[in-house]
Image 1 (cartoon, one colour):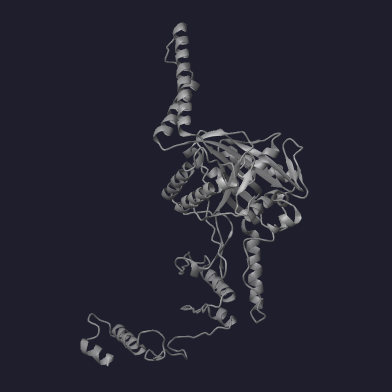
Image 2 (image 1 turned 60 degrees about the vertical axis):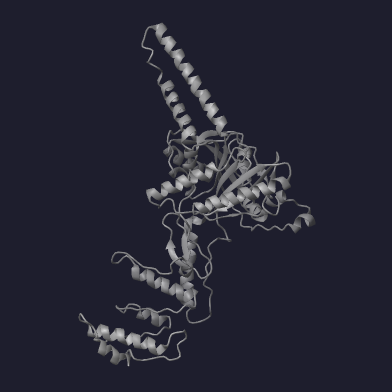
Length: 519
């Protein structure tokens, strides 16, 4: 691994990794989903046969270094009791969020080259294209440097570890330990079993997806990734050269036609209708013709896909349960999860975010059938700084932390039926703003339901009513206002508008009356 994020693999392959965020696909309208699907298909078509790539989806239990932080420190004042209650509520929600699962998505691509100097400019060009293509889809992405890639590998080889990843490039020369040594687990690997393996105290199992269905659903990948389990889903994709793919399919069509002729000869010899052909032959003939038409005229390409799932669990019983659950999801969509017997080590190495595939189980897929594994679910709203808590994401079950002032529009509105908790939500946000920021809070409250809360937070309550002790003087003027406009002329305009409203009627104020007020 090099500091700039380039990794040198056996066989003269150099790879880089880009991490990308989620976008709203699950909750989008049918038209938007079609647009995202078409965009994702175009993204896959970018990669040619000399550019293998790997899509990785890593689900890990979040530990002490969670992405979610409570940003309300104690201030040693009369509001600390409120802070304590609010912070304990927030910590409870963060602990519940997604059952503590952190989800990350990576794309790793590689180029064959003789030296690092040859590989680096090509990788940088591909990286810029990948980031640009993802940006066109509305997906935020960023390339990982060497330390960040090592951190991802460390998390994959240390499941369940609460120790943070510590590494510095200076340590290599000082200690003599290479980048492999820093990510290797101290307890070692155990690949002696047929169907499972061990990484330290954790048990793991590698399976591959056997695609039996004639039609796939875009929900298959999503349901696997939404599981409450530690797992890594990996898709190694190799593009087949277009001319070679068309030539191969044409050869298959010719073979099927030859088999048809043989069957017809047999039928004539046996004395029955030569148009009666075996059902399998008719199906194969139609499928091959459709595939050839797709490749020749519908902007489809041929891919070789290796789809693996690595489950990790602290006990063997839990591991078998997790694998059984994944298999249940696959069977629902007419696919099957098969264990990689005697190939657990090769499967685990292929799941690492390196771009190296040692599993030789490939399935030929067109662009559309590969793109059906849409890697997007729902976008997380997770902002730093003075972000406020707004509840839980209904799809991903993560907490929503947002700073409205940084969004495109800072305005907000609560909508809901009577008794659904609109006022409660507004009061909770008001308390959050009070505890987390120094903002001024002004409440206009016709029903008088916020007064007790404002008094508890040390605010000022001004009652405005016919029988209240407070009055508003519309002619009161503040002459030392900042800004370019004259406070006098602004007040005159305001009084004109006020009188116009008071008088009302069709005409409003007469010109002579306006002059008098203005004077």
